[in-house]
Image (cartoon, rainbow, N blue to C red; front, side, top):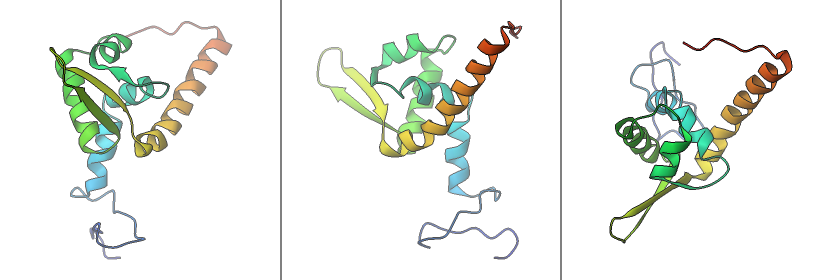
Length: 127
């Protein structure tokens, strides 16, 4: 493969060139590893949540940032969105199969870090 070459979705069985700036996989990685993306995926790992429940589960996230993050993750097919036709509408979010696959190693990373901190018994300063 030539330097800077990018593979397209039309090439079955081939990997994307993720270091190329135009690679579509790079956008998905950016959304997953964004400041709030990882927390949304971890929050949804055990159950589907409504918007306000998700907002309450992630301390420090604004409604605007949650909406933007969810929009990107839904577009990337990591999260599904279901709107109940009520007044006001009730919107529920959950992980797709792809979201579960991507979220599993993130949850494992989170669990390893929290277990290590608990084992150390050392309180880390917050920024």
